[in-house]
Image (cartoon, rainbow, N blue to C red; front, side, top):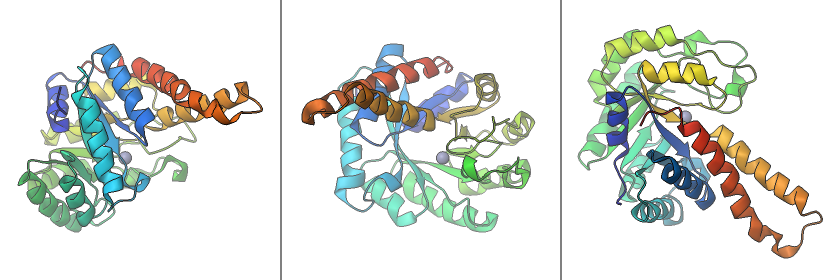
Length: 283
Ligand SMILES: [Zn+2]
């Protein structure tokens, strides 16, 4: 089938009181694994590109990734969507839209609230005029390794959410409730009360980044309470890395053509992990 709309999946997840899973993919092996898992489970999935993984303003970057995912989506029965993850730059988002991304994340969360609203609103107007949906961020999700303790001051403030969503017209909102990117030094504890407070003031679907390492019982609760898109990356990267490590350990010393076995080994490990994790979604 054709690429499906990412925001369509997110809204469907909201109706079903669950979350659609979304994966940052660095290459063909990762996209292939996401689609394998979607085919095997019958659940939809979103493939995302993180701008720093490619040459941003080259067709070899955004354009090739978009074309690859589009082609792969057209040749599977699984429902696959394409999304640009964290972009901090208007020109880059415009270029991604030109290259065929049907939904994008524009992240001005590092600015003050007023600037974040102004820049996001302009980007939403631009994207909507081209039929493209926009995710944005309020609060600061940041990197898990930078966290020394629960930094409440970086969390999304419920009292700003209603204003932000109303003023920007954004399609979905990434929030900070104790989640962060990368490996957590200590097991995270989501602030579910804050999630309830945020969900109570907006109908905008909410997005949880930094999904790896969050205990599954907390994830199930978060999906039930208003998280409708779940970004899952680091665990998949670990499966990829360790699959290569184990493969090379089994082919030691490596011969020139041993590399030919790496894609299958890596895809098997990532697919298995994603299949297991997708069981948490009621999509
Ligand atoms: Zn993120």
